Amino acid sequence: MSNPPLYADFATFLQRYFPGAKVQKISLNAGFTCPNRDGTKGQGGCTYCNNQTFNPEYCRDDKPIAEQLEEGKRFFARKYPGMKYLAYFQAYTNTYDELESLRRKYEEALAVPGVVGLIVGTRPDCMPDELLAYLGELNRRTFLMVEYGIETTDDDILRRVNRGHTYAETAEAVRRTAERGILTGGHVILGLPGETRAGLLAQAGEISRLPLSTLKIHQLQLVRGTRMAREYALNPTDFQLYSDVDEYIDLVIDYVERLRPDLVVERFVSQSPHELLVAPDWGLKNHEFVARLQKRMKERGAYQGNKWTDSEKRINFAGE
Image (cartoon, rainbow, N blue to C red):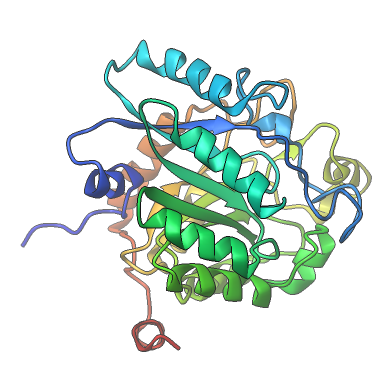
């Protein structure tokens, strides 16, 4: 009998939709803000957030969307001529605008040659019905994924990090989106203040109950200029930062073993620019981390879904 795959990976997932093609996401900054930055729900944003940590140089809101995409294409085309591209609306909350404004931005991206679809990052509390109806129509003519910031399933921790929404709102937004036939992704952070190992492992089962197609996982990173970095300076014992990368790897394996086997894991770590990062600093590239993770999984005989329980299977397949 052949060994099961260690985890459901994103590259294989994309090949289902773009067989034989190399596909690259290009991050965009379309000039959005967030409801917990502009005063609608709060001020200052999530306590861990500094969008500079994931925006490449070309990704600046003073440039038109088409120009950002063309610059991104030139960067990646040097490596892989003939590559196809997904326009990734990443910075801040990319559904937080009037419908016509959003429509113009999404359509501008899709009009760029070589762009074969959209990924739209947003919050669970920023998906009105009229926008979801438009996205359902868009989904019928192009590749589309909506990616929600879940971060945690614990409402107390959501309040502590100033997210401004509940987990119930997350579950409802994911359900409404998936019901439209739209690929739906989620994002979680491991190690937020107040989380326990037991809580995180229970979270994996809870996340698996959602009708998600993909999941991004990464470690908590303390970034200069954020409220959380200041909190850490005052009370470092409130944080579990996994300064030992092997400890984090074992946590990730325990987490992945409890995930639904078909839930595609897009990533396990994030990398903030070194000049902005307070901790943890492992000095590893993403591919180096994945290689260590896979080696450790093989040593442990671990694979995704290995500890996904029968009760969770029944709940998931019953659609409850």
